[in-house]
Image 1 (cartoon, rainbow, N blue to C red):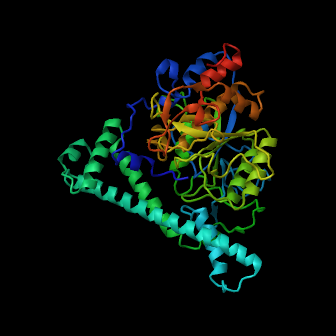
Image 2 (cartoon, one colour):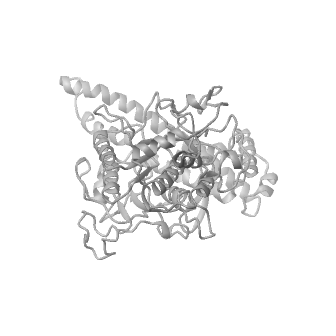
Image 3 (cartoon, helix red, strand yellow):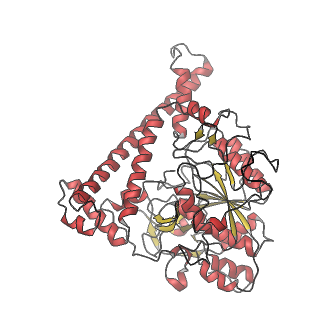
Length: 524
C-alpha cells in the first residue's frame, strides 16, 4: 500500500477536510468524555490504576526504527542473550548480533532502501521467458502461461503509467511550493501564500488547498517533507520498476531470492536508510508516557522489537514470512504490520508463518490499506484467508477513522469491508515520533494499525491470561458504535453506516474493553 501520498493530495486539492483541528494526542482520548474518536486509553488507565501489568513485546515489522529516539529508546526490546557487536550468534538463533531485532533487507553490500513493486517483479521474471520465445509456437503449458503474462504486462504498464502521472502531480506541487517561497524570502507560510499570485487554474486550486492545510494546523515543514518524500518515492518507483529487482536484491542481501524456505540472511541494521515510517508507527504504540516530552504512546508497558522488512516499494513474501517467525521465536506477543500489496506470489510461505504465530498465541494486527477500496471485492496481501481454506483467528484488520463524529469520520483513503475489515482506529493526522528526536503528523491505516496494536497491548499487559483470539474477540465486542451514515471512501456520493463498512460496526476502544473485562458494565 502507498504510504506517502495521503496528505499531499488532500492538502493541495479542492477537497475539504471536514474536521476541526484536534489535540496532538487525540488518538489516546475517548469519544464519550473528550468528544473525539480516539481509543480511550487515558480513561482505561484510570480503571487499571490498582492493577499490575506484565511487559508485552510488540514486534514492528516495518521500514526500520530509530532505536535512539528520545521518546522511544527506553521502550526498545533488547535480546539479553546476545552480546552486542561481537560478531557471534551468542543465543544460537541464527542471527548474529540481533540485539534489538533484525533486518531482512541488508547484507554485506549494504541495505535495500527502494524496491520495485511486486507486480513489477513478477513482470520482470515472466518477460525474461516470453521475450525470448516464439509466441506463435508455444507448448500448451507455455501458451497458458503466456495468457497470464499478457494480463500481468497490461497491469504493469497501467501501474507504471499511474506512478508516472502521480509523479507529475507531485512535481507540480513541489514547483508551486518553491514558487511561493521565492517570493517570500525562502519561507513557506501564510504571509507568502497570500502574497503569491497563482499563475494558472491549477495553482489556484493548490493555493486553496494550502490555505486549508494551514487552517487545519498542518505545519509548513511537515508539508514540504511529505511532498519531498512523495517525489523521491515515486521517482524511485518509476526507476526501480524498470530495473532487474532480483539481481539488485541478490547483490545487496546475498540470499537466494526465489528460495522461500531460506531463513538465515540479512543483518542487524534495524534502522536502515529510512526509518521514518517505522519510527512513527512505534511511537504510536510505545512512546514513553512518563518522561514529559514528545507524546504519549498508547501502551504503558511494552517493548518494541524492530524487524526491518518493508522497503520503499513492495515487501517480499519471503521476508514477511521470516519476520513473523523471528518475532514469534523471540518472544513477541503482538505483531504490527502496517504494509500490504495486491500481488503475493509466495502467499503459502506467509500463510504458514501466520499459522505458526497462531499456534504460539501471537496476535497479528494488520493495516487494511490506503486505496479507498472495498476489501470484500479485492483482498490485499497478506490477509487472514489461508490457502488451506482456514481463517486465521489471530488476525485483526484495521481501517482508519478521523477524530470527529460526522460524515467524514472514516479516512477518505481507508480501505473498508463489511466482511474483511474488523474495526476502525485513529488514522488521520496522527502526531508521533520520527527519526532524530523529531515528531510529525502522518495519516494512513499504517497509523490505525498501531493504535489498535497499542490497545491490544494494554489488554495483554493487564489481562495476560487471555489468548490472542480472546484479545481479538474482546476488542471486537467492545467497540464504540455509531449509527450515523458516513461517506464511503472512494465513492463520490456513497454513504453507509459503519456496520456496513466493517465487521464489528465500530471503533476500537480500550476503555470499553477494560470495563468489559473488569465486569463493570457491558460495552455500549
